[in-house]
Length: 241
Picture 1 (cartoon, rainbow, N blue to C red):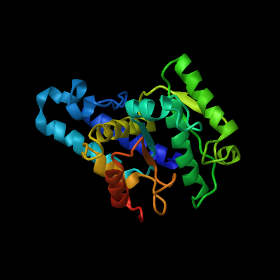
Picture 2: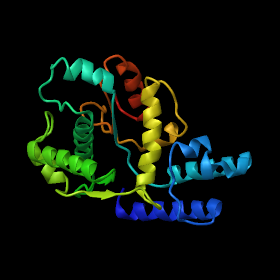
Picture 3: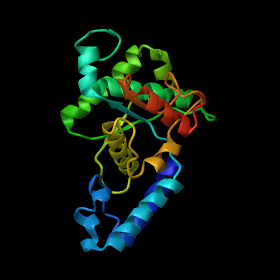
Picture 4: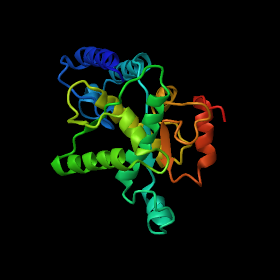
């Protein structure tokens, strides 16, 4: 999201919060939202719950943003790649792998955009040690590159620094939280299920040309056993396979 759309999102999210909770000092959080737990229960008022859900759906449709995501299937990754040692280029840590694969796709988006601009990343803060680790992996990609993208390309398109922020109030981190939940459920269902907001997020996914080799914003790894259904999803989003 650029700064204009960040401001648009925050304003729209604040309006929903004021309408349903009487204050904007609220943070949207999954999976409580879709399960109608806690404050999202609205005292069991099913009509109010539905109105809130429709408000969130309208928010996702109207705000302009691009989706990226990487899901690592940890058991298969550790068994087929880490333990087997078949690919010396891959990071052996799932989170480091996810960061690398996500940045490959984000750089492709930036390099092929209509406006030249540096990408800036904000990670949800998870604690001092975790934040330092994520910062280290980000710096490693900019210094060493990956198997498919040179270090100079990462440095040309990404700011060398990044931010960490807690998820509080209205911010794009709420969007990331909503998408991450749908993405998780989609992968858990072997990419054949349709989670609650999947059809709203899918048109927002980055897609260029055939969607292969880093030209699609969403990556599942490993995917050899479910590649066909993933390719069908790419086609539905707009990849010319």
